[in-house]
Length: 506
Ligand code: FDA
Image 1 (cartoon, protein in one colour):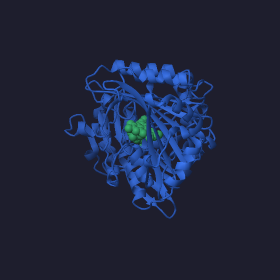
Image 2 (cartoon, rainbow, N blue to C red):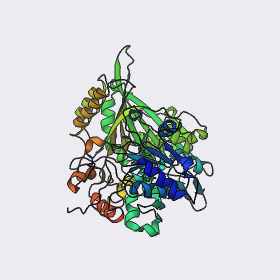
Image 3 (cartoon, rainbow, N blue to C red):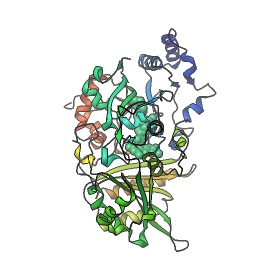
Image 4 (cartoon, protein in one colour):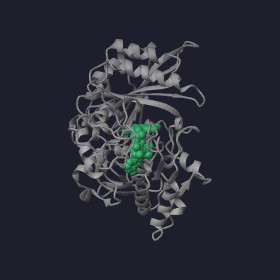
């Protein structure tokens, strides 16, 4: 591998078109570290021993991307495409083999057409930039994507993307109508020229696999000008286990206009010096408070919801509320640094049968252990639109039959021994095996988890890719490997969990 030759190639192929030198950062460049760290969310991957890219190309024009693909291929370097840098396992900016980051930070235009209820959004934009673009033009259109506004569109849409409008409208990827992609041969393709198989694969089959997606055309969805949110906290002393147990029977059956999730965490108890475990029951209702209260009282009286728990606001404010940003200044949506960066490890599950109360007792006991100063379990009720979309519609297969998606996250501070925290989350995950989906034990690709299996650095068989691939994609994996074989047979776009280009019978 020669990165000198790679750089020479970049300058050569772009000499006629533009000044590519301004967007190339080698390790000698004084801005290299700040460009590298700019969008890293999980600071577990910022240590001196974390493998670093030989070069970062912060492309300004499509020709920069085409040149990066051409020269990386020619000189045997791997590419890692980065949009928002939120990958849980850092696959957009870390690799064990010599590599180049193709950073799409500068591809972040958002164009909203209220009349046609569509938007074009470039991959390097954040969800916050998309929401801001919509909300600054209308209060009654929205987009059903994630709640954390610093997440990048590029990775998020590539893995599905869910948020608080999911029960009403499904995933972000369900609303992609067209896309612009640069393939392994440098061709710029749209839906028509890429064909329906590739267009299907890029809407959920995972990033860094089928090409570089530059931009997405999305269908916006109608929302009322006023929505209602609430949070009700219950802890062990307030019967939380019984309420949680009940929520499992209710959450997925509520009307589509009502989204609920629950976050479990350790908190201080009212008894001094003691800890307890709390569940925060949150909801978004696409309507006013006066309609919501009787609905919740009728379906879920155990929660004891009162009017003072509820707040009316616009849909875009409700995203900030769920994202934990206590402000009504919408400009914060444009701030990529609004959230504190942390060190964490996360995992995910899908639950299809209610967990018995005894099961929740075991979860609570694990949250009372000492490794849980920063630890959460989130349960997001499914049903609604998610139950209506067929499993094969897009690569994301976790649709009907799920009561909720569970995710677990543990954090720690710099300098602490990460082993004990990672071991805690793995123990919780093994405990959850008795209650989660099985054969396969399903997982969400956007909650990347390398514990569930990885590709080899060299050849990976279908059997090996199935270990992690069936968990993320179930039987859609077969179609994904066929599309990959068709569009990138030499497996140029790859990472530890990218689809290998194989016939599934091999
Ligand atoms: P990043 O740039 O790290 O890319 C992720 C993957 O996609 C990498 O493999 C990368 O190479 C590839 N990729 C990126 N851009 C590409 C492009 N243009 N073309 C091809 N491949 C590309 N999820 C969710 O569904 N709902 C939620 O509410 C949240 N909330 C949330 C909060 C926080 C704090 C974090 C850290 C993460 C989430 N997520 C989430 C998960 C999030 O959806 C997931 O991490 C996305 O992949 C992040 O996309 P980025 O572009 O930011 O990541």
